[in-house]
Length: 176
Image 1 (tube, rainbow, N blue to C red):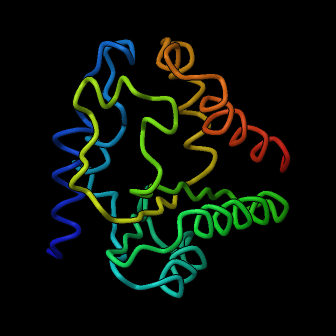
Image 2: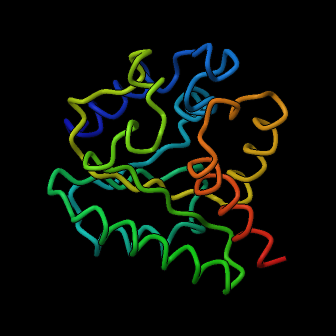
């Protein structure tokens, strides 16, 4: 196992899968644990944007739920975020059921207005990789609908909620 993959698995186990009172008792990523157990996560590590393009183009050719593209070589956060936003828009227009979600060490939970994740020890400042999670848009949006009903998002600032949930829903509904 690549050391980056090992770090991300550890981050998931120690942070993403741990229940949090401010998320209505749910973990920050309520579906991560099951995805690992079902062996539905695959990695693309240090493959550059070419590797990310390959993962996007072949995403529907396998039965994984998520591709974690990760790089120790930090791409500019604004560039990577803009690139992924463009791909997400293009996928929506083309009617493709896919979504790219960026995680970057230069954009903290505090900047997203999610200070409670830092206060409650949910973030890991030692995780210094940029990552893009490639997933089905419909699966993400369906999960968001379920989480909304549970009160999961009640502590999220409106702008963060809008960028994470409302924007994905717009992309999904734009292709229906």
